[in-house]
Amino acid sequence: MNTLEKKVNTFGSKSRQRNDREDRLIDYRLWKYKLNKLYTTDIDQIEWRVIDKKMIPVAVLEMTRIDDDQIPGPNYFRAIINRFETRDTQKYTITHVANCLGVDAFIVAFLKNLSYYMIYNLSKGDRWEKYNEYQYINWLQNLGQKTDPFDF
Image (tube, rainbow, N blue to C red; front, side):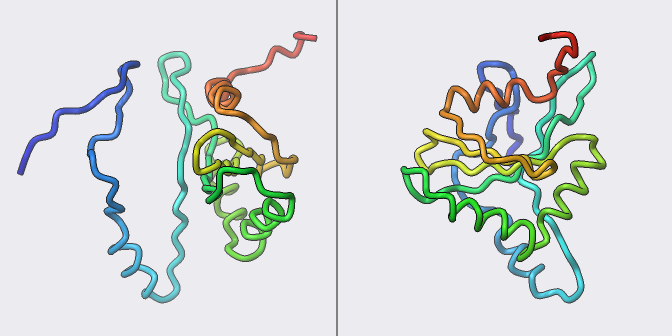
């Protein structure tokens, strides 16, 4: 067995450790689907920040790729919400985890070419927000930032 040296990005954070794009959990997931009366939620991402030298969760993200390079119409996004709220009970499980962490849960629908990101606050039921790549990076970086109540 090879010992892998930890790979880090230019900011010193852990980066992807493997070069392949294999879904290494597919066999397990397919096996698990066959089991009766078990329910598992695959949460895509939990965003963390170091605040006062402590790792603090700031958001739960559910990622969904839009298989196109154009932003689809409103029916597409209504179908995503419907899937989360009724078909798969994802809204209940994901917002429950987010509540336990004291953060909001968001759906992030992104274009295949990564040029635009549509964000929906699943915890609050807000409207979809459209961000280009730079706006999305800014949104991510600002997660967990406390707003000043006196900042008018």
